[in-house]
Length: 145
Image (cartoon, rainbow, N blue to C red; front, side, top):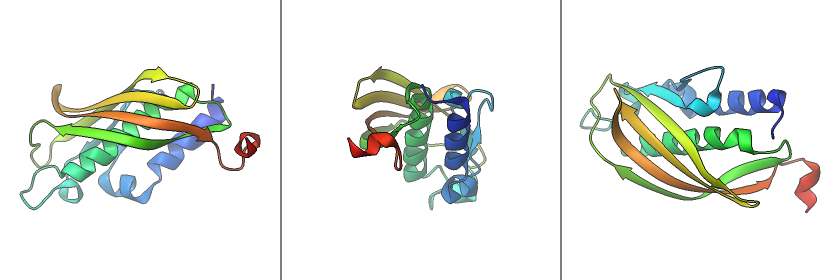
């Protein structure tokens, strides 16, 4: 399991990604980052029809799946996405608040299978199946394996 300090640093690194800051991404529960994220469908998250841009929700489904997996990683491990399948279920109007929650379906030695769902007021708007490769953390002792 990832240490508390390493997990806090990784979560902060995710939140500090410029795109995530620009979109207004917040943790649903700051005490439990694996609980998911939320973001407003502000101007930065809209397409030309003034509804949620599919690429934005796709990226944030991936982020929520990573946060769900984080407690299942060791300090020397990182996870990278190698497969992502998204279903956009319904449009989301401007100024709605979207919650995105990930869950770990199965964590193997080198691969993790996850699911993530985006919802507005409890109603699903998008879902993803995510496969992540578990790899050595850059600079860790495991990197030479």
